[in-house]
Amino acid sequence: MIEFIAQNMAPIMFASLVIFLLIGYPVAFSLAANGLLFFFIGVVLSPYSGGSINLAWPLLHALPDNFYGSRVMSNDTLLAIPFFTFMGIVLERSGMAEDLLDTIGQLFGPIRGGLAYAVIFVGALLAATTGVVAASVIAMGLISLPIMLRYGYDRRVASGVIAASGTLAQIIPPSLVLIVLADQLGRSVGDMYAGALIPGLVLTGLYTTYIVIMSIIRPNSMPALPLEARTLGHGVLSLLVAVLAAVVVSYAAYRYLAPSQGQNADILGATIGVILIYVVAIADQRLKINMMSRLAQQVIIVLIPPLALIFLVLGTIFLGIATPTEGGAMGAVGALIMAAMKGRLSLDVIKQALASTTRLSSFVLFILIGARVFSLTFYGVNGHIWVEHLLTSLPGGEIGFLIGVNILVFLLAFFLDFFELAFIIVPLLAPAADKLGIDLIWFGVLLGVNMQTSFMHPPFGFALFYLRSVAARVPYLDRLTGKKIAPVTTGQIYWGAVPFVCIQVIMIGLTIAFPQMVMHYKGTAADPGTIDYQVPETPSLSPLGVPPADGGTAPTAPAPDLSQPPSFGETPAAKPAAPAPDLSKPPSFN
Image (cartoon, rainbow, N blue to C red; front, side, top):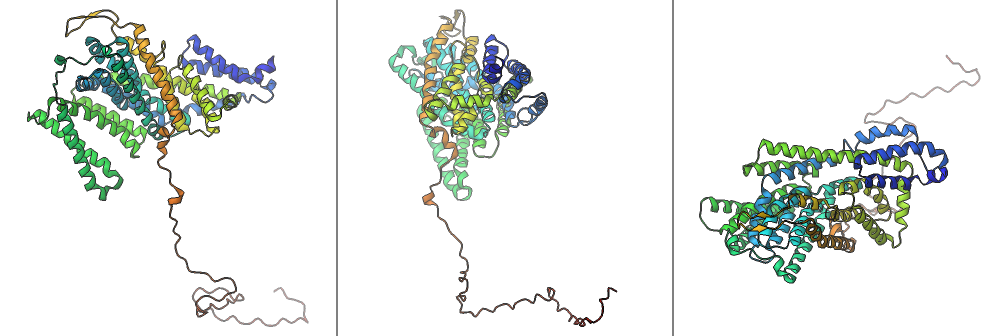
């Protein structure tokens, strides 16, 4: 019995961790306690393991190096987490989400499902600026849910689209989970961001497609805004003209800058066009020239600052100007500037942002420390080999492995959040994926899309909890219409999330079926047939024993006299000849 336990320590250790977590112990302490407990058991049972346990008491000396080395305390990659968290919370307090939802809601208001389209669009923008799911869901739940209920939206559709749009912050850069996945997989955060961009946009398109279908099948579930609610009036044509003018200016600037700026000319040209139209909109509003409609003015003034912040963060990372940590620092400064420009930057806002950032960063750090203790023991009992053999032996090869792993992560996401999955499961899956030849950036993005479902799973999805915390629990009187509005039940929130969980599962399948959505991060591969090899011309050498091609007219160097010392430009004095020795006498050594 002892031999059986010693030789199967890895699966027993993993099963014990699952039991610890299901009981409800904090994840960080469950990892550390489980690791230390089985370390002591493994040292005792090591003689009975037949060589499958490689643990000894001196191995505990490696823990301080694991804590203070490059994996935890000195990990520059994880430094981006507090920067992006601080940026997201400051932007939430700055009222950017409120302005965006109000303005984009007015833009899409005349069509059925317009508020739902606005929520999805703003959710994608908040995801690209904040990267924090809680901030996005809570902001949109507080602002847009009462408006959607006021104008007769179905409660399941309204709650589902708000929760799903908030979780876009999980996969659209600068997502926090992508930073953690890149760290655990040993890959570049910039590559992970580049690989996740297109899948995030495709997922946004799938959400929009679902709303289009629902607006056709059940038009009464998402009515258009009534005329009296469109306070900004009409003016879409004016907005289109302004956008066209910006495009023309950008193209002209690009053609002018292309000879001198090369590949950067397109970005510089677009920047010039956007800045110009932004300045014109502000001048038109302040000076009351009325060259644009109120709707066009508001959309341009509200939309361009967050887009500029996205370029400041993601654009500099993708262009190679800044690292993700530096991009996060610039984003935090940009968020402070935006809040100050709106007059909403105060000491209280900074204190709240710093407190929330400290809590989240400490949460991540403690889980990572616990994971290091767990992995020390798990690797010592050859757990990584057990997991690798278990996963690589799945039928179907690479596709079978991907399907099996995604089913496992999908089921575990019912109980664990994305940080816990990233620190516990991903380090066990990565070696097997690498052995099968799977690109780890593609694998990481695939897991990121899958882990996104952990926020939407009824009944444990965190996005559902966030929405439940701000949705009305009791009937209330609407402040504008004076009508009594029924509350949103927990069941309605859960049922509203189910279609979007199915959409996320479809997105997992699309990512597996079309890996080029992610693999574009490598750039365009060069075609060997188009490469022109040019060898520089060299003087021809004559074959050995054949006179040179010039007919032998080239002077030949005299053979060196090896009996004399080398000459360095001076003619040496003649050396006197040594006298002939007298062999009739014995040699003299004086």
